[in-house]
Length: 474
Image (cartoon, rainbow, N blue to C red; front, side):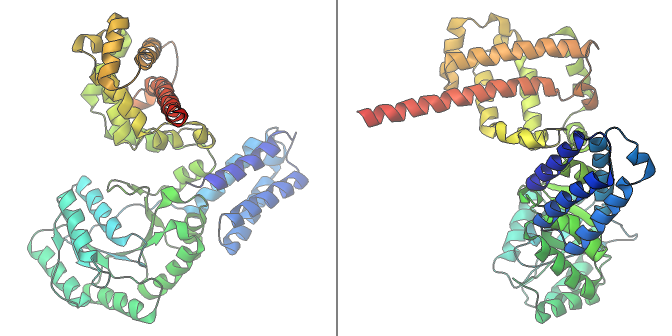
């Protein structure tokens, strides 16, 4: 996300890093580039103007002027101002007692309301709540059926009613929730392809009838200023409590995320970062600012790692690493955790300094599957003691996995090197990310294997090309 904006910011900071000190002249040059980058990212002109003014005033402060590292200073200033622009942090949902807490979702068609309702339901279940999803989008074809299907996938109850009256459905759903012990009602309302009087009247009437405790506007982040404009109009009629930005993973610009809080005054509560139903994240302005500036998001990465690792398993793994007895079975657990956390590329996006290097990394879920296939073709003894894998074993493993013997050899060699490295890390002679994960996810092992996986993929690709050429010649 925000790739183009990150690239432009990095160019600005690099141009300042060669300067001896910050001066009014080089700050003016930098801000000209920053202003251009933000406008190209579809950020509101009013927001851009105020942001650049704030950054320039901070950069011209007495202490900053004396700095010998203008590039670093500007990164710090821009990071702070971006955080303020998108903040403050307000990702919490306020629950009422006695319940149920009523959350109403509003927005235009195509913004992802129905899917977001299901994602929000999954989030609530993970936070020990009993949600009821309400299919109250009675205008879009198959909207009710879509929410029912998503509810079945998540094992979350969905309230439906054979009616064309959205107010009646909403009122009856809330009554049903009160009578059956639900903690939260998530109301999926109807939208339109564009804002019109009829739609705004309908959602306002539903809100008046059920008196929701919180109203969230669901916006497609990729629509940029259109999302901001629709947020302003919805806010005038509904008094929004927050915004949920969807499709943020596909937003290379960032205009909506950077403008919406400043224009509407309403916080971004959650962001959708993928199509899967677990791809809804709490919005943290400070973490997002770090991502935009290419500094990664280690805090979120750690949280994801801790979410998918049991404490006991982490301790056992740590002991194995210290002894150098880390085997391929342990490695498979690491790969499984990577997949649960969204895949290698998603993880690398959160690593400091990696945002601009992802184009050079051709590594996806298929690569993980190839490595898993090789490991699953090994015997139990071979997984525990890779040193016993000789040429005949390599040929057998390769045949079982559908790869070449060299692919098996490359993975084994890389694994052995990473195992030795992990032993050094565990012995405390080297520092690293291992400590961040409490002994759970070892990025060095995964990183080393990533190189092996890439080689396997490249060899497979070359083989396919040779075969195609052979057919053409014949």
